[in-house]
Image (cartoon, rainbow, N blue to C red):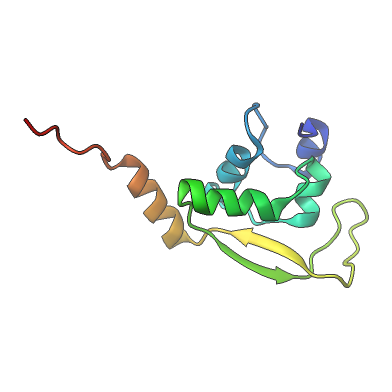
Length: 109
């Protein structure tokens, strides 16, 4: 369950239900950078496993690195690095082109 009030507080797009990974995909496609602290704040407990599923199950392109980010509650930057995930413009275009392309093979008779 995601915290809709916290999502609104951060200025993120509205969560309309469904799986957490689909909300993460929407955020990445729209150009947001997400990180472990932000995800935990809005109710996604394990960003690592969600991103792994996106990669393996959906072949969803993304970039990731470990880095320092501000805590969404305090605004302070703790010294522990967390996972940061984003999509480059090229990755976004490639993914959207693949989604629009027909993926069915013609039936052979």
